[in-house]
Amino acid sequence: MTLITKAPRGTLDKLPSDTLKCRVIEENALNTAVAYGYREIRTPVFEHTELFKRSVGDTTDIVQKEMYTFDDKKGRSLTLKPEGTACVARAAIENGLFNEALPLKLCYITNCYRYEAPQSGRYREFSQFGAEVYGADTPLCDVELIALAHNIFEKLGIPANAYTIEINSIGCPECRRLYQDALKKYYEGFKDKLCGDCHERLERNPMRLLDCKNPHCGEFKSNAPVILDYNCSSCAEFFTGVKAGLDALSIPYKVNARIVRGLDYYTNTVFEFIYRDSSKSTDESFGLVFGAGGRYNGLIKELGGSDTAASGFALGIERLTTVIDKTGVFPLPQKPDIYIATIGERAAIFALKTAQELRRREPSIWAECDIVGRSVKAQMRFADKIGARFSMVIGDNELDNGTAVLKNMATKENKEIDLSNIDSFIG
RNA sequence: GUGGGUAUAGCGCAGUUGGCUAGCGCGCCAGAUUGUGGCUCUGGAGGUCGUGGGUUCAAUUCCCACUAUCCACCCCA
Image (cartoon, rainbow, N blue to C red):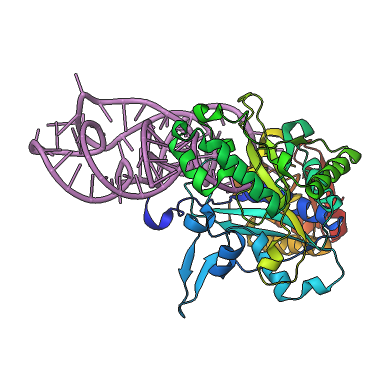
């Protein structure tokens, strides 16, 4: 299999059984968000490259090596969106949405693109559900966001013990600067004992030192400075408020001081939803992050809007699908209500008309009939294969008599019905 | 980007110490006195044995490269 019959690396065909799962997740997330006052927004798949450099951060891996960037025919540099938050922020600023009643709550489902090495649960094209709140700089706002996610998981049937909500506060930019300095100073003491990756982290992104998986470097973690100790009094108070709010709603969470987000724009609250397969490993570090988010108060101003607080999260649809496959139960796919088997041209036309009429009367009725001219036997076999609940055979006899036999495929019960009265088909 | 595994029909797999028309299971299509499903039986369609080179009389099998895929790292939803 080569060339044109192979999907590009890192992409995924969503086959009928997959799209069904995606729809369950998407409809659930969207409908649940509505109950919290979120309204859906859709933005372009590509944006000016500069948007992501400014928002995600020039030094992040996403911007430095993972973006699908190209020049259009007029030489403008465009980039396929690597995440949703920056795009929504841009659209909100551009369209003056902050002039509406605040807080402004927006949600979206969108595909994202990152040029990374594909791996389990990681694709170059993936989709996210996201929710963002603007103009609410309070712990309760963050609590409500986490509550929304929690509610979505609950409605999807994911058991509460299958995942953890892990929260942390990385403070305001001032707290973080102090902390990073302290962390750097601490690790510089062991510089010659660190692994190669950690040497780079020390320079580029010191907070990443804490989740190095090299056991050698791990030895230094326990005594390393903890970011929560460096939160200033107002940031600490904010974080206390978040915890109190979650407690009040009886939403279980764990404080995990090692959570740092990869994107530059986060401030204060950060959190992750992590699936932990207990049968696979007892190691704390093992887990699939299927959703994450936090507060990003600086972003709107950074992009040229007025100073507006913001907070939000994103869920990975594909990752959520694997979590539900392992823990929850997807509803069974729908089956046809009736299959009309036919003999001869006259009956085929009659069946086509009848099926059409049934579907017009009752759009939820799924009616099928033969369109490939197969034998009655083959038609019945097909009806069975697709799981039709009822079947009937129409031939010249039935057309002349005006009656036919409706068969319940499961119980084999037969019932005579009047072909001239289409209502007798229903029920 | 780094390291390791894999690559034979739609799916899951055999196989050849290099050699006749490359097999099996499932699935798909059709038939079993011609107007009826699930079981059974029979038949059928479907494969450039990932791609390109090399060694050889001969390569799906050996060697090399490339590509894809999976796993781990980096990073992340």
